Image (cartoon, rainbow, N blue to C red):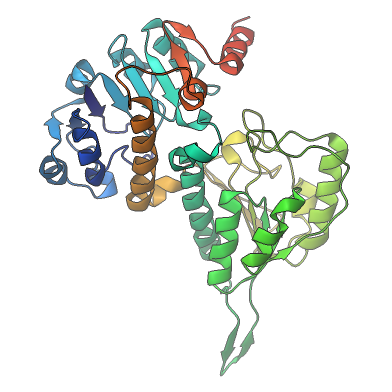
Length: 378
């Protein structure tokens, strides 16, 4: 097959779906790799590197889509890109199907078999294909660096001739992949870190990174789905969370929020009244901004200042670290490709292939997405 790597066109995207080092993995499987000229430039991967790795350069996106049997991307295609994917072809990459219903419809109409990396099941043998976790690692790291630039303080404890500078206080909400990386990064910079997560099972992970785990009594509810994602909680549960968080905010220089619920609005953990409790000059980095935000005052893609606190609605932080983000993403998408095409035909009896597939044979085959599209079309 011919595997196409187009240049990402969505605003602010700097990553590339396949780095030169991964080209040989596909060519050894006897596939041709087509790369649009300039596809890797923003991530510091030159056209020459792709050629040396065995890829064929294509002048523009139209020619690439015309030839490619399989398209690998980072960002979900636009409607126009989706219309260019070869009819009956295959798409592999992020898709955000709930946010891009028109794209999903086009892919179905064109009989494209589309695989969304967000829907790769969280099972042991799919860990190497978990692009969400890979990108969350980058986002958690970058969030703390942005916070360090936003506050007017240094993070570490310093003993100086001018006196002792106390360490910054950082609160991380959510101890998933992004949260744990935020904790680790803040600790490396010398901050005093506390973390909150409604799942008691993550306490040891938080403490192993040198942070204090916030203990609290919570209503007895399931906090995690079978697939390993956070579950939507009751109003009573959220109220208890907010109370626990509010008790720490008066001394926090930085808050990094990472709480998200798969397919739904992010939980509101910090209200405007709670922001007022924070010290002047503090900062909130909201990694759930694209899902509505964990802070009531968050605006996606913007930094707003309210009540003396800067609130950054983080969007696509991995694109700020394009070299390593591309390398990590490329590894996960290549591993998924190898899984999907290890046989001559796609095996939909395999759990990974089945659950990652969104459209196939002219239909939306994922029940969650199909149901959402029907409701949206009413």
